[in-house]
Length: 79
Image (tube, rainbow, N blue to C red; front, top):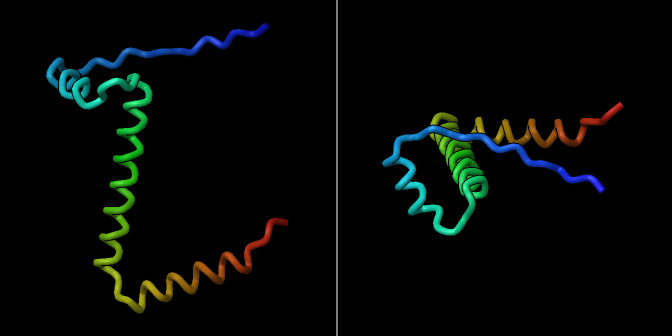
């Protein structure tokens, strides 16, 4: 029988920050809660970057990128 021990770490934060986060996390454990925060932040950053690209690029640029991406996927083969 093999028992896997999980490793834990301590993160130092200001007491006020911890109190705010504890109220928000409710019944979740810290690992679950922090991973959820990370995922939300990651999605937010990606959407923000995408919207910035949409703002900077013309419709023609976006269409050319779309065509190029499609062509790459159709031609890509592992050897």
